[in-house]
Length: 128
Ligand SMILES: [Zn+2]
Image 1 (spheres, rainbow, N blue to C red):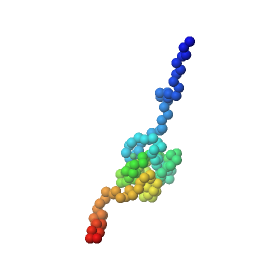
Image 2 (tube, rainbow, N blue to C red):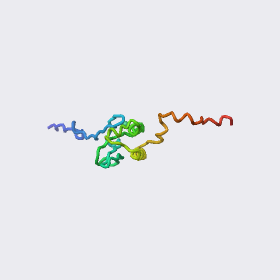
Image 3 (spheres, rainbow, N blue to C red):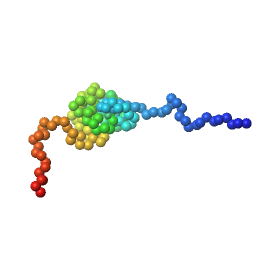
Image 4 (cartoon, protein in one colour):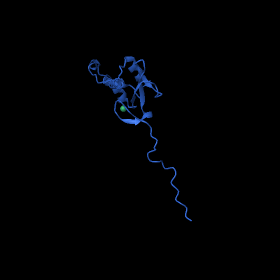
């Protein structure tokens, strides 16, 4: 009497794979796991702020953790404001920058060079 081949247990059933919800970064349009992205929400008062819980009420937008995406979102292109159909105040932007992940010294990369030619060259110690 042969034993019937037992069905393999432990194989995930097709179509039943539990996936993380995917969200799109509003700056680079890359899709990532929702938890890898930071949610920003426009609250009922019209202010835009970081939503660490991911559950705040209001219109939300997601950003990945690339500094350039945050730059783009908060910069002149106003990607975030457009995504949220909101007008970000200077304070909103400042507060978001404060909390933004890995957004260190982002001001160093500024493409407005017009003011900078007044600064003297720093190579002063050559006659040491
Ligand atoms: Zn991005």
